[in-house]
Image (cartoon, rainbow, N blue to C red; front, side, top):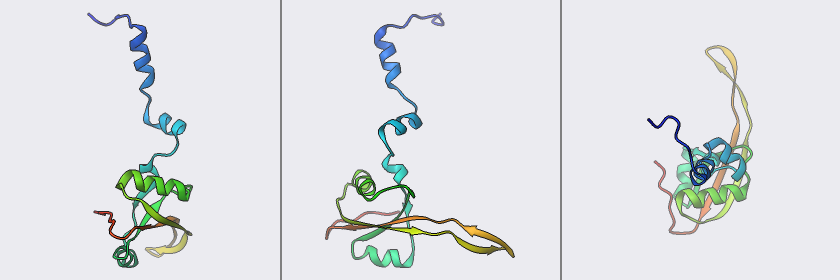
Length: 120
């Protein structure tokens, strides 16, 4: 029975190196998957994609250098320029009742000529 197995120092070191994902992100910084939420799909975004400009919904606290490094890590392309836009919340009516459409942040990522991002 291995219920009361003694662990060696090496096994303890290996166990300490394995950290849950949440705590690892706090110590290392924001992950690229958490910075880039999703591609922003709209008519204007699809028109600009033909010219090498891609639009993404990003975390509201993300900075331009963080967005640039996240794009490099996720899509293996080098952005020339990153522009960000704050989208403010809007008041709407939902089934006759007042509501709020949440805001956020968008990033316009300009790529070199010939580079593409496959957005599914």
